[in-house]
Image (cartoon, rainbow, N blue to C red; front, top):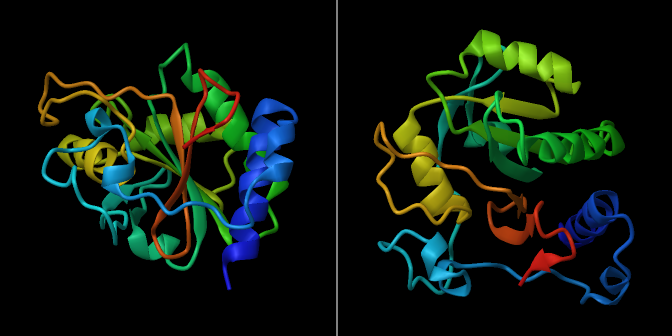
Length: 205
């Protein structure tokens, strides 16, 4: 079914991002399926912290670099990597965008694999700003959506969907999401792996 593509994607992503991590050659044939109870509780919204099974990414409605509304339906039956960024970031977002670009290039002809970036500063990252950023980063529109949207929704995705940020705010005007994590999502909207750009030695277990 989808086991072979997801394992291959996992291996290639790690190779590109961290050169060659030899231990990847020894991983099990399938990847772990992550639920909230498997994750550091500081990264998980308290409302679902003890959920042990059946976690899937939340429905969403965002706007991409072309002003197009993007929802979970655009990722239906796809494997994808998700991350969070902002266009004016001069630190961790730079290597993160580079690595996403490398993956995009490697998988540009594979229709099963897509990419999704969420701006954590939606007021500043307007559609025109995202378009300029996408052009600068070499984004292929059919492969990679660079998105903005309601800040509360983006915050909920980080805390209730992908589990990538320890900030305990509610997504209001004073909250700021910033995370170096990539998340691997399978065709059934399940979490299959996490990688942190600042600690590029391995995927988190």
